[in-house]
Image (cartoon, rainbow, N blue to C red; front, side, top):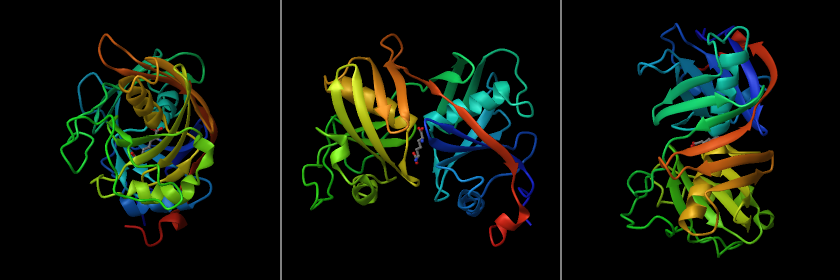
Length: 294
Ligand SMILES: N[C@H](CCC[C@H](N)C(=O)O)C(=O)O
C-alpha cells in the first residue's frame, strides 16, 4: 500500500490550470512518478501539476516544493501552482501555519517570494529569467536566444520555425503568431515539445501581440498537454516580448482561463506574476488509487 493512501489533498486551479496540492511537510515521503500518474488519473485529484510541499531547505524559506506533471515528470517552476500553494499556506485551515500574508517558497530552480494581494490574488516573484542557451537548455550554443531554429517541419504550420527561448526555471519556446487561435495546438504541441533542439523538452507557447501592453497566449505544456493557463509561460513570453521590442515591461497576458499581469522589473531583473487562485474541493487519496504504483 502506498504511504500516500488517505493523505489529504486540495484540488485547486489558477486560471483553470488544474493544480492539486499535497502537504508532506513533517514526513520524509517522496512522491514517485508512478504515484503522481495515479493521482492524475483520478477525476477527484486530476491535475496539470501536482504541487508537493516538503519541509523548508534554505533558512528563511517556508516550504520546499516539488512539482509534477501528469506524465510523472518534474518541473522546476509552475507559476499558477505557486499561487495556489501560497493560498493554501496562508488560508487553508489545515495547511496554514503562517501569520501574515508574505512567504517564500523554494523549488529546485530557486526561491519564490509571494505576497497576498487580496483574498485569492497573489503576486509571485518568479526570479530572473535565464536566457543563455545552456541554461534553458538548448542543444546548440546559440549566442542569441531571441530567435532560435527548431528542426520540426509542420506540414500544417510551416511558419512555426523560429521561436524565442527562455527559462523561468523550466524551458519555454515562444512562437510569435498573428492569430493564436488559428492553430491546432493539440496536434502540433507534442511535436514541438519533443523537437531535438530541446534536450529537456519544452513548454510550447503561441503568442499573439495585440499591443505592447497585451498579449494573447495559448500553451501546450511539457508533460501535461493543453492547459487553460501557464504562469511561467506568461512570464517567459513577456520577457521574450521585451527582448524582441514587441511588448512593454509590464503587460496583461490573456490565456484561455483568464488574465495574468506580468512585469519584468528593471531594477533587479526579476519577473513578477499576479493572478488569482481558486479552491475547488478537498479530498483524501483512496488506497485503491495506488494499486500497482510504486
Ligand atoms: N502550469 C505551470 C507550468 C508547468 C510547466 C511544466 N509543464 C513543465 O514541465 O515545465 C505554470 O503555471 O507555470
